[in-house]
Image (cartoon, protein in one colour):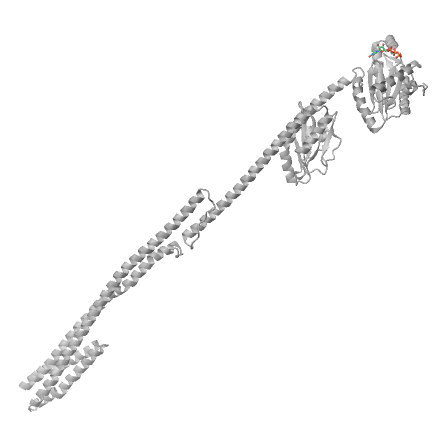
Length: 613
Ligand SMILES: Nc1nc2c(ncn2[C@@H]2O[C@H](COP(=O)(O)OP(=O)(O)OP(=O)(O)O)[C@@H](O)[C@H]2O)c(=O)[nH]1
């Protein structure tokens, strides 16, 4: 039934209508026959009436002849009454039959012939006989032709009756035949309609069943996961619409599954990337922590921090600030950020509040005072060590990001930033403590000046730098004159006070890049970078003079103190600290020998140049 591409309803409708139509068609003749049966009955009655009237017509003919014959035999007028009555009835009967035979030409012509012959009999014989009899004349000659004429009339009456009966019989036979054929047609039609109906019903049921099985088959495959399965669309019936809807549903499902699979793949990729990034982060942070622990100084630690943030926050810029007295010093900066060297504690909200501070210009967030105008979004993470805010990590988003991307980037980076800030804070606190302890070990407890140990460390670096830059490095070895006598005279405590005040005077005389240290006892060493020989001697003499002129306030007394200074310089006096100090010490010894309160250089030892006091 593939060729019937119509709606199921229409198919069902056809399956009912077609047989019904056939039934109607085949039943219509039968109905016609049934509906015509009354008319047929009427016709039969009419036929019987006509037959009776023909019979009556024959009787009237006989009555007319009998009346004339009786009159002829008796000559009495009453015998003519049947004759005249028959004439009237015969005329009426004939007129009535003429009407009834309308359209039946054979009967009409026979009736007319009968009527004409009867009128011939009446006119030529009956009327003549009556006239002759009334005149008393013989009618013998008329009897034989009259009888002959009457026989002809009677014969025509019989002929009319026979013709009428024949026609009646033919009509009845035709009716019977029509009825039988109608019944036969109805029976065949009913059977045919029944068969056609059954056939249509079977075909429709088979078609529906086949399509449903096909839909079920494909639906099962889709259910089992083969989402590429589709139904073939045939026609436009409800099952085709269902198939079309099923295909659309399968396509939508397949598309969604594809999208879901793609999303899952993308998600897996994202997760893998995230895990890889997190693993990399963890590894970096772990390395970072190890490196920080291995750092010997804040400078080293700062370099490690810079290297790590550049790898962790690719494309970013930022800075690391660490507390120095009442401000935070910029230890390192990276990226495009122009970070100020120092920043007051109040300049950063994270330092003020001890909490992360996220700034996004697009959100009109509160900006820290240290934030540069070109920074669109930044994060400040405080460095918390033992409950104190010791600085902050300032992280700016990569410049190529949009404001929204920047905020998202910072939010993602925040956890890592906090993590490394904790490591940084702890490491810097430890390093600062270590440096403090180290500084203590490098300091002379009485004067606060660096000691000989620090001198060794410092001079080693400075000699290397001076060698690289081919610059001189001057050494002034300074010793208080007759300090033993002073101690003896004013006491050891007064001697300590002199040592303290001399150290202060020395610190006032030098620059921050210079170094003054107490080498031991009443002996000091001053190291001055980039100072030429004559300038070094002049500088030593200026120090000597200032001390000599300085009124030392010792236990309420104004006392004078002098110093002798031996000067030597790199590279002329030697390549190492020991060599140079040995030359300076020799020059100092020369100054002591030559009267004290004077300056001598190692050059004087060779007698090349003697400076007057
Ligand atoms: N008050 C005090 N005296 C010290 C300190 N260290 C060393 N001295 C004393 O400094 C004196 C050094 O004496 P000397 O080496 O003889 O030298 P001087 O007396 O200054 O003689 P010249 O150097 O030749 O002028 C010793 O008496 C030490 O006891 C110190 O920390 N405090």
